[in-house]
Image (tube, rainbow, N blue to C red):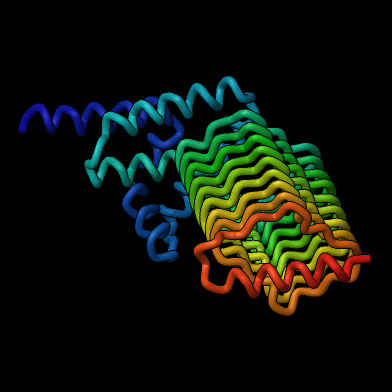
Length: 313
């Protein structure tokens, strides 16, 4: 028992050593935890969260080496803490990145950095180019309602948890090539004003692109969707490329609208597929697709796709 108390005391001391900004706010730890859970923030919780925000921005300003040194130390402490509930709650309180409703003027560059816990950028505005290339998100990442007013780069980013871009607006080019999401990927009702490139991306969980609006090119070629993929009611004003993409489970394009070219050449549908009410106004390519023979409505799907192919312009 004495060794357990020493472990708790030592781990808490090390957490404060790695996060010295938190020492003056220890009285606010419990209040901040309650605020995170229930949403009501009193003076102590507000002071703690303001200090955490300032410390986060200061650390970001020191560059990726300094940031990743902190993230590595936090990851090592997470391993030591194990399943201790109170310590784990404190670790999360100090490890979370909470930059909600921020306005980032100029370029925002966090390429290659590690987020050890949750990363929240919901509602934030990125006025210049936003660089998240090769960033690693160990916890859930939220960019819900965020606004990217220039180009956004998430190429080769790794989301170990959920990635939420629901209702986000991306005004410039959006680069998601070779990204990976192990949790749920949500882009529901996101708006892409420029070209969006997801080529080579890997989605391990459920993927939601329902109601997404693509004004430019939409490149999903060579993607891998291990879970269900929902593109229902999506709008593709430019060319939409899904060539050589593999859909491991249900793939729904019900009610989707393709205003220009729709390229599904050599795509593999290993689960059920649904193109009901989908509209194709431009050229469509379905040559070389494969459909799961064991799925009961497969004949109907093949017939529907053959009709689309014969009717292409």
